[in-house]
Image (cartoon, rainbow, N blue to C red; front, side, top):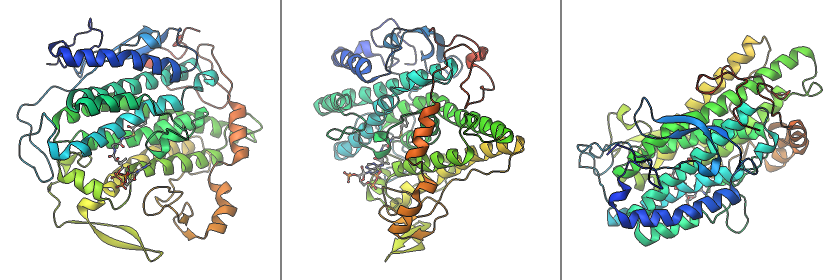
Length: 467
Ligand code: BYC
């Protein structure tokens, strides 16, 4: 099952050649995907050699192959973790029963919605980032951008495989729709909010890969627990690739922070061509709050239903002792008659908030590492995650105004002060003014420190993209 057929049109470890109908359907979708990639993928660079990692198997020690490749020739493949024939439902109403290899009729719509929502984010992020190649701060960063982009393309393939294999005609139609929606388009936007926000410069790209890709980690981890086994198996392997995306984000911001500190010690950071720490804080506020929205409403019957059906679990379900969650509660802040109160909510209905709480802890660990850099540089400043109520567009806190400290304020105060907390037009203009491409191997833009080490053991001045 885990052997890989790389000589086929679509590399895979799912014995695609053994199901001619499915193979034909996916081979028919493939040129549509390539058209979409050429039309909506990275602008320029398509004919250049990029030093990329390609997934070639799911073996822990050797799943990736590094070489120069032109992006449209990237071998987007279908890889699922090997099947465990004894695997049982780990949670929900079917706990202890054998997992499903087919979609049960009564949960078909719910499952399709989860797969489509997950799938939609992948091409969306590629669209959001398509112009960034023109202003890359180094060849190292340019290559990382394209690595993230091609792997988001592969994650789209992962979801399209599920749609084609398990959802018949509707699935094939959904797979086409995934190539039709467009990030930020007023008429046919991407499904989730953050995936319609512009990622128009590299500071936003690094914040996006830190915070929004990290939502991906938690959502994929919750789906990796699924009792629909093909979904669990594909998400497990996607998580392997996802780790690099968050690395790009966390270390990207860390390098901007480091440079900000170096320049702070020399004088006025902006006059010296850097991004000052207060501005970094504003972009942190923005992308963190947009990413919190991606967990859905705080109290959600959708989340309860998906858990009950065994389709979407908690982060690392194994860590918990109880897996049915009937009669248990989660203590959380809720809004009642315009006031914030702390209350017990039925656990199944609170599962979006439970997952969000795990995500918040993970984000805090990253911010702690950035603050360690600031301390090591001897600068007095602390980056902070804002309250989970700050600047929310989805869920209970949407439509109400809160400061980054979580204090409720009226709309007039919000309007008057939001420019202190979120990037304003002047900040955007300033950050964009810094974005000039640096394409000389080993050289970095003025506003970012070099990485600690290169890719795959190579030096920083390796020609990661053949310009
Ligand atoms: N924007 O019950 P509710 C990634 C809708 S990122 C717009 O509160 P639910 C990646 C919701 O659809 C991970 N609409 O929430 C990262 C529902 O609509 P309907 C992506 C939203 O359903 C970087 C209504 O509001 N994966 O992989 O429990 C680069 C009430 O919903 C939003 C997934 O998301 C929003 N933010 O939870 C590349 C996993 N939030 O039904 C990739 C699959 C909610 O009333 N998706 N709504 O029309 C899910 O598990 C769930 O759909 C959500 C929402 C967690 C997103």
